[in-house]
Amino acid sequence: MKTNFEPNSTAAASDPTPARLSLIRFPAICVAALCLSTNLFAAPVEMTFDGVNGVTSFGVYVSPYYGTIDGTPVDLFCVDFSNEVHFGEQWAANLTPISSAADLGDTRWGAQPDALVHYEEAAWLALQFASQPVDQYGDIQATMWQLFYPGAPSPSSSFWLDQAQSNYASADYQNFAIITNTGPVQPSGQVQELLAQLPSNGAFNPFAQVQTDVAPEPGTQAMIGVVLVVVGWVGRRRHQSLLLRFQRP
Image 1 (cartoon, one colour):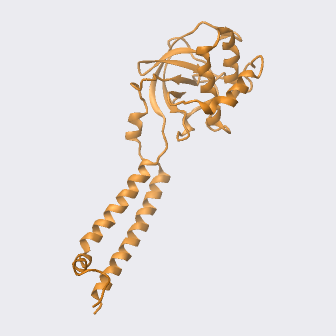
Image 2 (cartoon, one colour):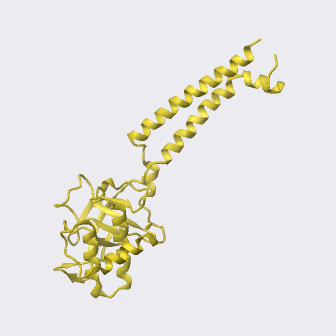
Image 3 (cartoon, rainbow, N blue to C red):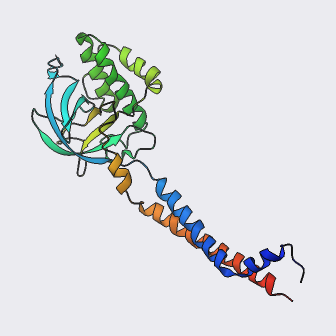
């Protein structure tokens, strides 16, 4: 019998054990890759609203506000004119990262067209409070409200909207998150949706545990099943073909 394999390779190829190992190893790699390709999910947290900066406009206190996430102090910024939050209020919330890999399904405005862009523009505007005089706080806040709810008070001009649209893509929002009350999210009658600026030192990362615990969604599970079936079928046919080649006289 003439083959394209060296004599030592013939004995190895006729042994089904390596083929079986390959059939196990490759699907396992596929499963791991698919599981790691899931979106970033919201992290459940306990929120407390502690206070405001004291500046009022349009008859209400405007951002920035102050609170805690699971006991960690954070700066808060309002993007929701349709709801309210009160001093000392505590509530269960979902924390969603502002990222192209994030699932915005737990946010109040995530179903809107260009929702991610609007959240990024709002985060860019939130960054401007630190460098602007307090007489600009009202216009910055109103611009943030208007991104999501046209019925909110309007700023005195389009200056901050123009600035946000021109500059939002240049900033890094990895330290920002969207805070939305848990449960079925309604347009009104619930706790205000806020943005949180997390500590920049990385000591507090509420998303770390979520990523280790997350399970594949049904669509991902179905994809895994299809991959396993196809890979198993191809591997079996290949293994049978190798056995037949070495069994021919």
